[in-house]
Image 1 (cartoon, each protein chain N blue to C red):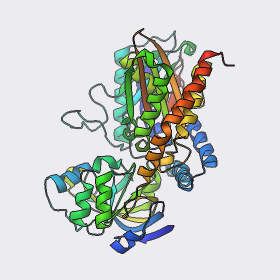
Image 2 (image 1 turned 45 degrees about the vertical axis):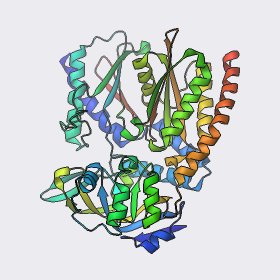
Image 3 (image 1 turned 135 degrees about the vertical axis):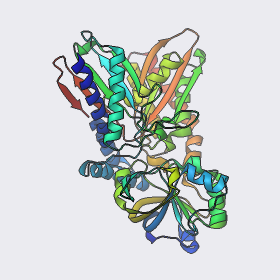
Image 4 (image 1 turned 90 degrees about the vertical axis):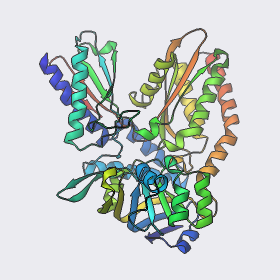
Length: 294
Length: 205
């Protein structure tokens, strides 16, 4: 069992740097498609530069962007996995600290009030770790690292709507929030929307939708899927475009996650993710074999 | 129009630039950020070099010092909105000609740009690998105590593409784009609501 935790440490360290040096395959495909379809001259030039940057980062083994983000981990376990939560968290923390030092990653994390940095991207409740259960995993552990850049994280919004506002309230808040902030989130962005749950759950759903979920996997609920498609089309009609300089590609995708909520509540949250969509994933099976996916 | 320009930029060159123009830069550019500007503007400490006609970059460099020399690791551009408070002072008092950033600046900067002759260049945010390669070297570093928010002097080559997003004639692409989006928003929302009412009424395949 001790070997699992030292392996987890190694996997978390690798995932952190892999997420910063690569752009996930689904996001890269969406960027290529956007480049083909963009009509605005400035927008096309920006998308071309983005694609060139991804290639250059790969060729020279460099970071795609200088912002090494807030280290966030989503860890899902199958029903046959028995883990010690304290040791798991410790392994993630050690992994982040190790990667920060080994690869000279910029230390971003500071005390919220004194602004003092400990220098290795580990601190009070940092890295952020979400542990969930996934039915189809069996005896495997899925570790997803989603370092979150600050420009896009600063463009986050949450509102406790009155239930009477209904669908109109939801879409109005999404469109309003996108117009208010997406131009500072390094668009074309991935827009994550959380609907329902509680204040805290709703925010996490929006974050999970924007970062952990692939952008080529629509919501399994056909009504929510239709909402995702129509919201994406609507957001792209605003004309904000790549880097907010105009064009039809303001968002690459809209991902929505829902949870049931209280009879007197309608929480809606929006979290944006920049064009990099940084995410790296590993699957660890019960023989402790690791498979990386980007 | 597309231009390749050498820095520093004189006021005549700056006045020629219009929103939508694309620019590539050669020469020296100066890297600054929150703490650097707090020192100059809030604490009133004179910058260690003359900023007249210089081009500033809103940056958060990832660099390390090896045997007394600064080596670049990854140099990218940060969001400009936080610098709004300082920019008019840098333009008016120190004669800065251009600011490179992402996401744009606001009205007081636009006003100073018009009055004293300066522009805002929008870089492609997040494209730091490319940016790092276009920075040929770190030529000088002042105020190392503020690391990584020191005052950096970079030598750049074909640095860009940069889009003139705010010019010295009172025009801002951001203002144009956002007022269009805001004007269109009610129609976008109404159409969407009608569409979705349909979806949630019936089953979709």
